[in-house]
Length: 285
Image (cartoon, rainbow, N blue to C red; front, top):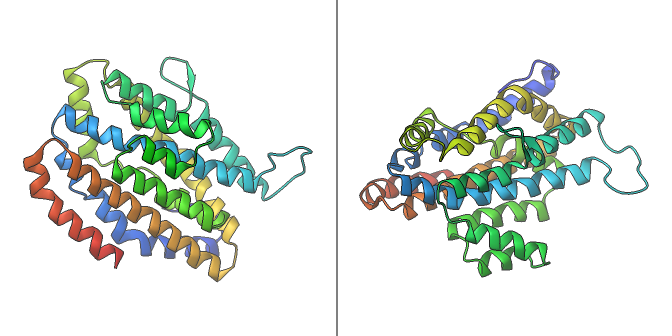
């Protein structure tokens, strides 16, 4: 993870963060979840959980946009112009992208559509979004909707960071902790299922391809510049940014553990859960 447009000093700072994140990121890439997904019902359970991460990602992004750009009237220039541009670009892609059919939709709406196409229950996430639109607090909405416990804990971590952190910690969680690590094993599994039921997973396949392209080619380098701009030369900010990224990655590990525990493939679950639980515990220590 490098960006030639960063100054040598900023590149060194980013490299130091990446070095500290490497063990946790490796644990995510090598997580038993991907091998544990063996049936169509397993993928459905995965999507029922993962959709909450797709949804709460937008709150992280909107917190950055509302703090680092001017979203009020009267308008005044605010923040670093390059950070403003990056945030508006990613909001455009995440909130109003053009899908494979030429229709405009947010990535959350597209993911939900992918769930419906594959007969995945959208009841809990729909209930959460509807309750929040009616003014219900996030924690209460999650409880009322009987959201999966692992997803509820994951969203709780995100909103705890939003309440206690600042733009530099949000940017670090966004850049280092929220990019979807999609191993080839998981993609092969999705492709195999899609081959058995043509059309039923086309939206999910598009979503995965789109994020691989955006994270690697467009948003990745810009996100690094955002972190560097918000942290500057402040050692404490860089320490806090690193801690926030670690917290985000560990939250994702815990979510993956929770999904493994909920998979219908009970034999695989019994074989893999103890090892992944131990891995998460050792990383959190």
